[in-house]
Length: 85
Image (cartoon, rainbow, N blue to C red; front, side, top):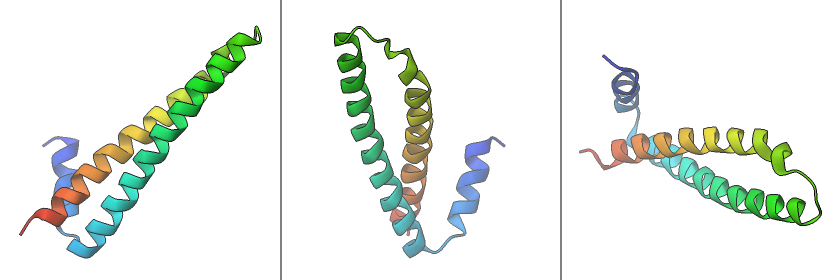
């Protein structure tokens, strides 16, 4: 059994209304991540135009991508649970 199937089994025990709320909130988090990635790219361009290095944004970029990946998986799994009969 892999991790995602165990995670899906735990989600399947949850009430559908709670799954919908968590799925929507995870989707909102994913939208926030996209917004943050846009501003990280803008900041990198702004830093480079002033001769500064954009390497200081690497930690923020990696952290934002990790949160976005987890939010995407979470939104998919919980909204899939809501759609199940």
